[in-house]
Picture 1 (spheres, rainbow, N blue to C red):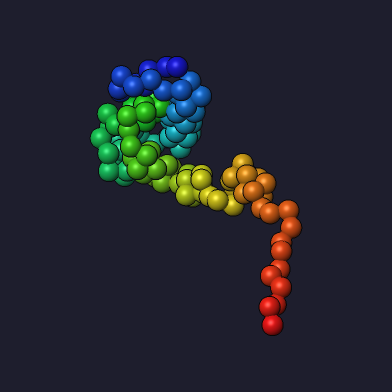
Picture 2: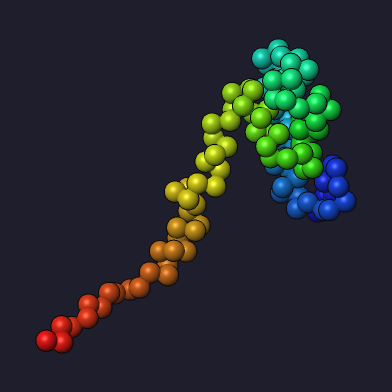
Length: 110
């Protein structure tokens, strides 16, 4: 496990890797667009320091601020689908496994 960038709570290494990649991808997208950090920060309504934390994958920055930056860069559309139940293949498989094997129809008692 790796320590998060802004707190003492350890992060699972898989989570740290995902945040590092996200931060790096955000920075790359900003640079490809040739947008200054101050411009992105202003449009996302965050400080430049917070933007730099995001670009480093800091786990202490709120998901709302990450999403604001993604919005400024045009990547926010998929964020709402990250945990969409129609894409929850593990959950759907578990639900299907718990379905009854057969359905019993009650007899009429007339």
